[in-house]
Each structure stands twice: as C-alpha cells, then as structure tokens.
Amino acid sequence: MIQFQSSVQSPFSIVTALVDRIDITRRISANEDIKMCGHVTWVGKSSVESTLELHQLRNGEWVHVTEATFVMVVRDPINQGSSFVNPLVAETEEEKKVLQVGFLRINIRYLLLILFSINMNTILQLIHIS
Image (cartoon, rainbow, N blue to C red):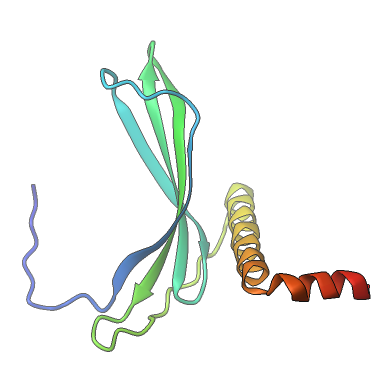
C-alpha cells in the first residue's frame, strides 16, 4: 500500500448528496468474486452524477447484478460553500450517449423537485385553467 503524506489540505471536499437509485437485478452470492466499475455520467457547476455497477463472476462469466446512481457535490472546506467542477468533454459517441442520459436524469430530478414543492391546490388550479 502506498501512502502519501502531505501537510497541504485538499482544495475541496466531495460529499455524497444523493443516492438516487439502487437497482439490484440479480441475487449476489457471497462465494463468488465481484467486480466494481463506475463512471461519471453528468457534471454540473458544483455537482457530479456517477454510476456504479457491480458484476459477479458466475460460471466463468461476469454477470451484471447491481447498478447505483449517486449525486456528489463539491464543497470548499474553508468557507463551506460550493466549489466548481471542471466540465466533462465527451469524445466518443458512447461517451456522448452516457452524458445525454445523465443530463436527462438531472432534469427529471429538477422537475420532480419542482412538482413536489408546489401546493396541490395550485396544480389543480393550473389544470382547470388550461
């Protein structure tokens, strides 16, 4: 194990803001190897969405068993405010598709947040107006 010692504090902290979704598609066995892989699926000004996948070795083949989506936020440890994240640039078509799906998920989260923050009477009035 390599251990780095430094007296310099990291310029920011990354905190889990939301465990958006965990899909367990197959039973996980305690007797077989598990492979964990993940990637960034969206980047905002101060937040990052990432997806984590678990695969398990079954009969010599890696089988997808779990997928989870997390939203992380970047904080400035000195003044406790948000900190900026470098933009993510998709180079391949696969990367572009991954970022598009992440962008769609973020927008759905915002819409749900707005929907659940509006009073039900206001929604009913809007429905009757249109």
